[in-house]
Amino acid sequence: MEKQNGYLTLELLSDIQLFYSEEVSSDSIILSNDEFHHCTKVLRKKIGNQIFITDGKGKIYNCTIETIGKKELKAVINSSISFEEKFPNYIFCIPLLHNKDRFRFAIEKLIEQGITRIFLFKAQRAVAEKINIDKLNKIAIETLKQSLQSILPEFKFVSSLEELNYYKGHKIIFDQKSELKFDKKFINESEPHYFIFGPEGGLTEEETESLLDKNIFSLADNRLRSETAIIKVASILTL
Image 1 (cartoon, helix red, strand yellow):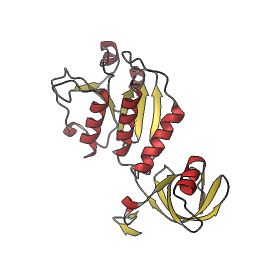
Image 2 (cartoon, rainbow, N blue to C red):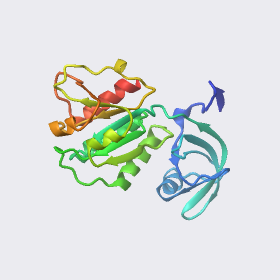
Image 3 (cartoon, helix red, strand yellow):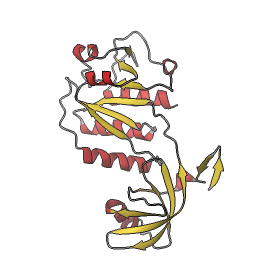
Image 4 (cartoon, rainbow, N blue to C red):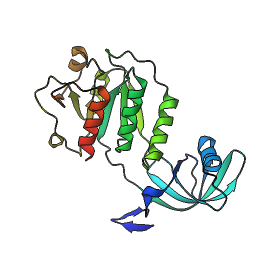
């Protein structure tokens, strides 16, 4: 480990296998359930082996396995790395898409690019089943580990787009009919921005009109699928 620009970093961070645990104390961490099974049964880690664990709150811990039981292991913390949230003022507002694979793909790509604030809503033109929050959190954890992120995304459900009027910040809607092309130059990173996407059929006029103090942009001359639009905006913002 070395210190650079005031923050601790891991040498060759991209080469590590990352685990996730909420059971973190001042000097040790417990791995249980799926994380324990993957660590000991799949990767066959043993007592004395070095492993890396994130708490999902901005830290990655360099640990040594101390004990292995039947259902959990205990790892002693050697050191830790702290990471700041990259884009705290970018809030992506995504409709519950009927196609579960496309919905999952959009969520995964947002997390991979460092987006940690995601609002979910049921659009009038989207016929979607009720979301399984446990499955959604599992997807988030797996993507977090795979992309070596350290901050677990915050998911929030809003009953309608109108509810966003109670949140301070700029509301940005994406609509193909807008003559104003989206560009990062319109964004002030120091202020909250809510990026709002419609389902495949787009937002209704009622939904659009329900939002106050909004700006409407287009992303392309042709119509984009919802997940494509979501990923394109995230890419523009995070480059």
